[in-house]
Length: 358
Image 1 (cartoon, helix red, strand yellow):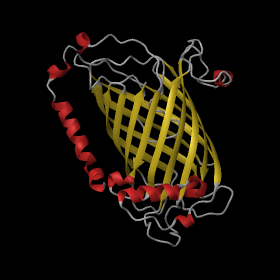
Image 2: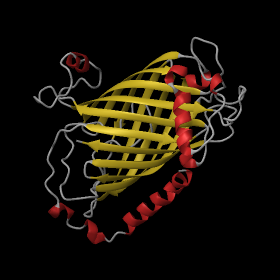
Image 3: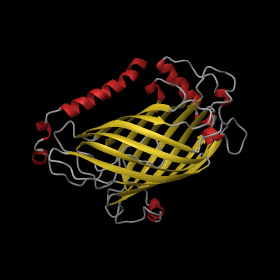
Image 4: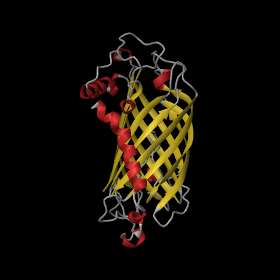
């Protein structure tokens, strides 16, 4: 399994080469042969998987997985709103997403994140490295789109500690990969309920494309996160270049408030008869000013292991996205700057997402 993971970057490079080397004729006359785009309404499922074994390491942010379901929210369109009636007054009064003239969507996510020190063979407490921690959570997101702007609110409820099943999950994953089990989970953070409120806004700046369907755009963002799990403000941007760029708001690693595939009801219908319906490469940066991080600061209400965190943290992400009809796949590498003072180097992990619109 490990040799397959290490080969992923070569496969991504080959895909990029094939796309850029394809003859111009393969993109010609797209406007003539494609079916007319029509508005449609659909739901989406998106599966995120992040792991540092893509980069050949096993430390810090070790593994993350999230499953998100999103559905349009349009109470004026009978039969297309999949939400219970009692939720309508709540959503209609949320700030930034309460405009009924905008395109709106709701999402529900469930996920888990694992954090470990670098030396997972050590049974004693590793004092100068981050604590062992697992985080299991459920989140509800509310999104709206007005022109080239998207606003998102997310309410997240989770568990830190043994009840988050971090040790059990890592034992299963390491068993599948043939790796040794981590020996220090007895020192993980204590059980604690987490509650967070997250907000983020994005803007899509889209220059005109050329006759072959090639285009680029810029998607800046800014947001905040407050709660007893993490508290920070963040800002950044993503630039994309490719063929038939999707009318969405870009890609992101697992980040609260950043929904990559919100199911708005203005998305064009899938073009029949095509296998590859679009591709693009992208690069993104995100910077955070961190006021609190339970995975470094330790438990909020109980004594636990902790380290001195860095206040300023940044991510650099590069990757490739491909659309196959109603399915989109994205693979990216993320370089994260040092998060605590005794961390000896930046952290690198891979991120894979698969989204299905139906």
